[in-house]
Image 1: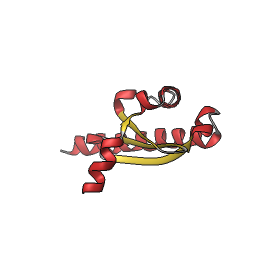
Image 2 (image 1 turned 60 degrees about the vertical axis):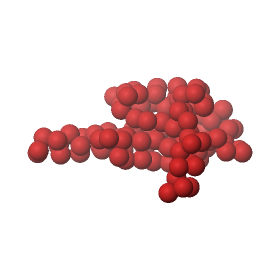
Image 3 (image 1 turned 30 degrees about the vertical axis):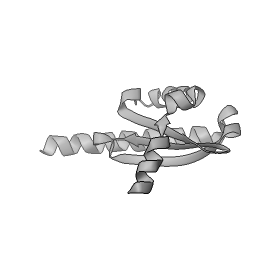
Image 4 (image 1 turned 180 degrees about the vertical axis):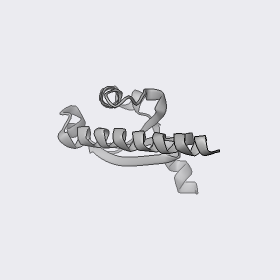
Amino acid sequence: MVSEEKENQSERSLRSVSPQLYSLLVTELEKVHIHPYDIQANATEKETGYQLLIRFGNDFSHKESVFFSFESIENEDNNVTEFIKNIGETCKQAMIADYYKMIKM
């Protein structure tokens, strides 16, 4: 629990940590109709890059995490864009499932 609190203290909004990556994330997600307010995008700066933590779904209960080097972000490598596309699809599926759960209530 203490380590989780420490991790959360160094975690900051991706928008302030890496505006370039945030812009790429938002642009790609808009293509699948996911809006910036549908996700929480945070990052922790490491020695050689950023550890991303993307939360989404009802109460932001789903999360995906990945590490990208500064170089791969700068060059917008395929692994960065593929991760974002996968997040978009995963987020869309989670939102659909959450919607149907809400309807059943």
